[in-house]
Length: 257
Image (tube, rainbow, N blue to C red; front, side):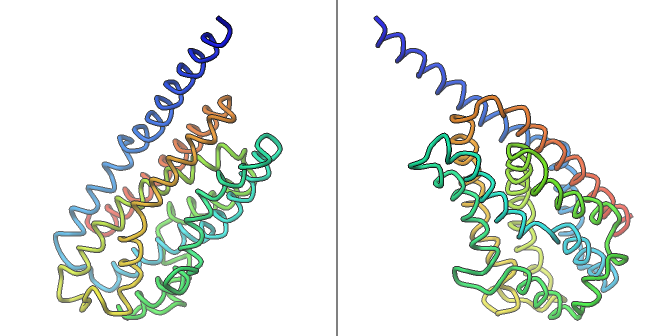
């Protein structure tokens, strides 16, 4: 009887875990910020941007992502530090789900670092690194989100940071898959898919869907060990998406009116 009851409890826990992971994912996918991004992308796909518009867009993306690459690597270590005392044999595997994204960002697979790719991409469009790095060229909401991400990845509870990371991966697919096609669509941008300067979009187009799968795997395994952290995780995702939606609303208004 005791064994049977234990099996039932495990089955119930598994069902709850699947539901919670789905809720996190659906909460991100149906958040109003996604609709704001999709609206931006429709405008983005309607015409090529002028140089001042490209500068604002690319400088905003730089300001927004300024601390993300280091933050992802730090989050992987924080996950391991939190989980290893509870799972000393396999705890690193949970952090590895996040570290896999950092491997791409740091250029340890088939490219140079993604920051270098982004700067090369901008340079091909005639926009210098100095212009991209100047925070005054970015929209204010991108600067606000970028500054917040420094603290969120490093100082907030691990589960909160994992929620931020999960939301970031989900939105990245909605960014880079359309942007890949948009920059190939208009001859004014002068890109072809295989040229080295296009590697920034090509690499994200290839790898971002797998990053989402890794993030879902990570939160499932994390919540299986620490189910009480669910609310912190959801809070991180919500706070990220709130500022993210603000950023793309601002970009839409300033670029497309």
